[in-house]
Image (cartoon, rainbow, N blue to C red; front, side, top):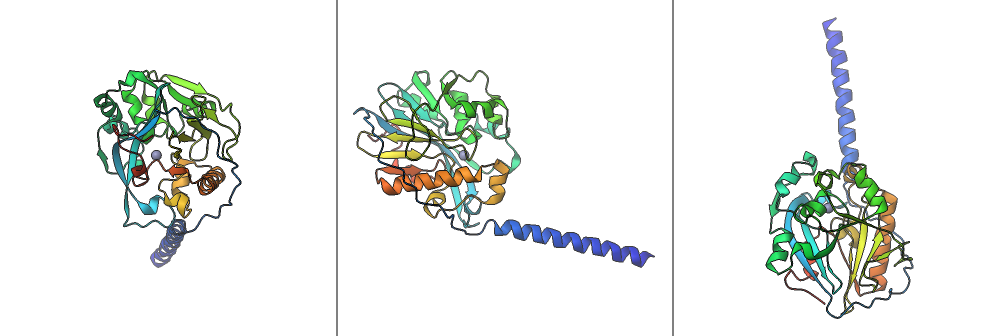
Length: 318
Ligand SMILES: [Zn+2]
């Protein structure tokens, strides 16, 4: 009798072990290199832009967090530690200064406690955007607005230091934030965020179906890209020199996502709840736009090397 029980137990254990090994193997397979097959899309002519001569752009790096490349894009290596940038971008414009994303706040340690343990990785803190701006003579109250590329913690933490500044969100994004969806814990922990909703009332833009022209001169144009999260956007910043940036947020986490191209690993996409089809469509559009129009430089929000293209505040590029 005892032998029968032992034999049955061994069979159950062996079965479980097989299932676990199979599951781990399948998950590991989803991390291996696989070039994403995306089409080349006709994105049309370069959209008109007449940025004022004294418009400029600056980067405000506020810190980084470590992520092995294996978790950043398919085919990345476990041994290749990427220091994910958490950087705000200042667009200086005579009609108003705008921040795109905010980076880490003074209070980043408290914000990290609000997110799930699986998202926390070793981070290093720089100077928060609010303090960088102040030392460069820009009072946060004078900001015309903040445009988050989306409302995840690493993009909105700095709102904590920018109380009262208008936070530009589109209607679909605001619904997602108001639903207190997973990933919105930090933004929803802030009291009295001064949301400034906007519509995509403008026409198609480089293959994206709709657009919002911030100042009406084509210098800062927001398009919907609701794949990473429902509120995700791409912000095009078009400088007087003719250089253009596509700030793609977390459409991809590192530039390999656009360059190979390669998706984020499957378990991470499921954890976040990404819309894979939308992300693939937007990767195709950004790749096609920057291939056809050499003026356009895409920058992934967490790729520190891509940010080298933008001078660090108080330096700026026009
Ligand atoms: Zn992010």
